[in-house]
Figure 1 (cartoon, rainbow, N blue to C red):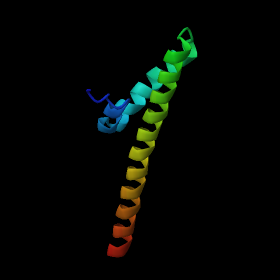
Figure 2 (cartoon, one colour; figure 1 turned 180 degrees about the horizontal axis):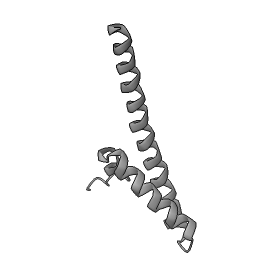
Figure 3 (spheres, rainbow, N blue to C red; figure 1 turned 60 degrees about the horizontal axis):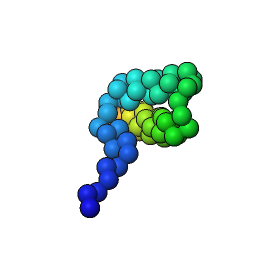
Length: 76
């Protein structure tokens, strides 16, 4: 029996910009309506995963900025 692929596994490889762009697309599809319940749930889950990925990128950026500020303060 073949292992099932992990849903949304591709998200971990996305850049911030790509994840945000896909998230905007997911939100647009959900807002437009017309999808079945199953499709809507899958879109919602993907949107949650994309939002989490964006948060990971932003948290990494915050940490890098804090480290750069700390380094600059130490050099002053």
